Image 1: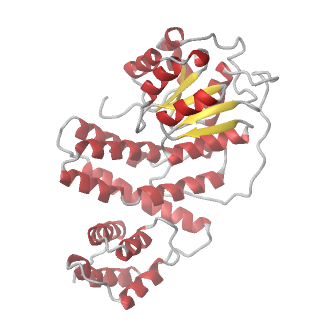
Image 2: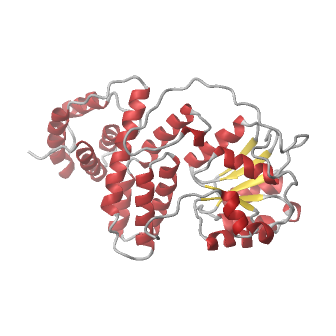
Image 3: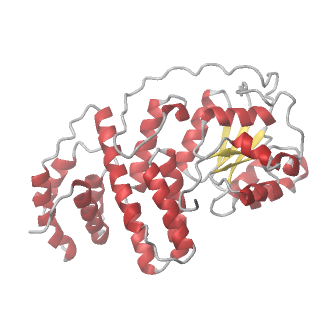
Length: 374
């Protein structure tokens, strides 16, 4: 059903079913391209991706396999790189600022020296028309998002043979890193297998999500009030992708529905659902990160409610917050991980962002079900 977005399927199976290989190919894949996971050592890959969390997942996995990764944040940068440097493959995001993946691919294909360069789409879309657009632009394969390391390796091995290496060879085992034990409660479901078993990478992803997306509902509300629907849809598109990357399935699904509603001009009925899912996800991430750091997560909720009730009038009247009140809030926030709500509230107060701070008060109130009004 359209109300339930399709889950990422196995890219190779869908790819073959849609006959993308024959339509888009500028070269034949290697005869041994059916290898499960090739030795990627020495490959030169251009990763074109505008989202930092997506970059982190793909780049970390590739670097551990000995791949030389060059990052481009949008299509314009990608064009500059392929004009001055040779690559064995390009991993191309589709939805980017400045220049999207389709137009970037068309322009790369127009360059004489890149005619045989494998350009592989990275996309969460699974519809036939999306794949056909990829083929028409000149892409030869695709990797589904959220990225699964083994699948990424299979696709690269299908199209690229590293110098002096057999695509059927097994990759070297990655070196073990010191890892923190992280349990993600509640609404966060992320299999470590998708992150190559890297708990440190998981910790970075969770922390990055909390820092980058912690105030996303406040920013979304401001855009909707201003009537800036294109920017609101863009914000939700980003949220959908990064939420899927950290395993916040509820957030990703709600953001997908809300993005569709806004893009079609419908009433945004999923707004409350998205906000609630985001609150649960941030609470789960905060608990996971704090537990990983060996810190106590106990917060005196009565004390917090009293402080927020005392704070609210200063924010509503856009007055300076007394130092004593700020100090008391800082004491409660001292054990929170970066990006957590109390820390963000304090930064907003420091920047005299009264509207943003009021939004954070509402978020904190909903997160812990506090009653802040006297």
